[in-house]
Image (cartoon, rainbow, N blue to C red; front, side, top):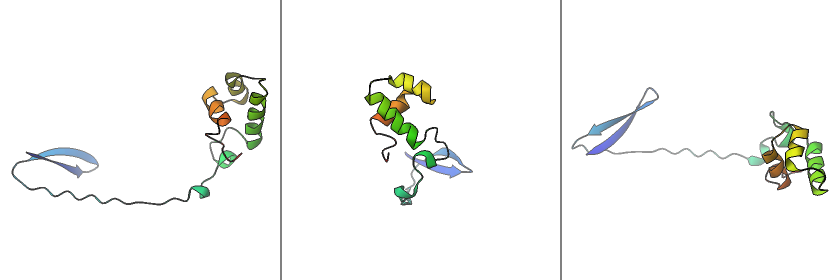
Length: 94
């Protein structure tokens, strides 16, 4: 028993075919994107912080003046965002 998946109108339907040979062809289209051409940091449309904010966050945290939670409250972002800024997982270019 072979299972054939047929796409019809955007919905996938499972069809069971008995005794038929099914050939499955998959076309994979690879599109290459230039990562450097995407906006970074404050140039992104949904950015809540500026590069100056990121530098201040790192400076204040390294001086042990504020916790990540408090910095998040002060800058209007969550503590996890502050953590990722400090560890340079985001805003790497600053």
